[in-house]
Image (cartoon, one colour):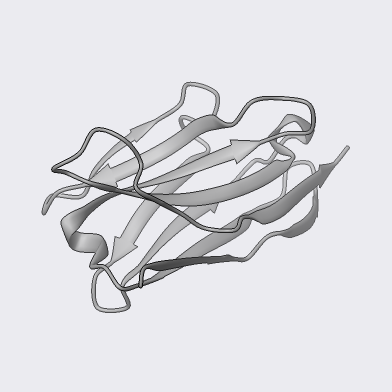
Length: 119
């Protein structure tokens, strides 16, 4: 049974930092494309970042490029999202997701962790 467990969310002032973690069980993060998404109140879920492959190739949404960094620790089977220079518009529930490279969609999702940035 696959589980993705996010942690690290919280309340932070604008300009601050948080690091989100996504601990996986039932799959190897090194063998999946892993992603972070977020959903703000009243808005659709949006892509934030993804990481894949043995070279840990990362892709970021324009809105977070230069501020957020996604990484992976294969030994801990965990992916991270380091968020710096946070803005109030980054406030959202952040979700971790996993995509089997053999399929086109995101196969597994975590429950999400709330990030709130105050101005």
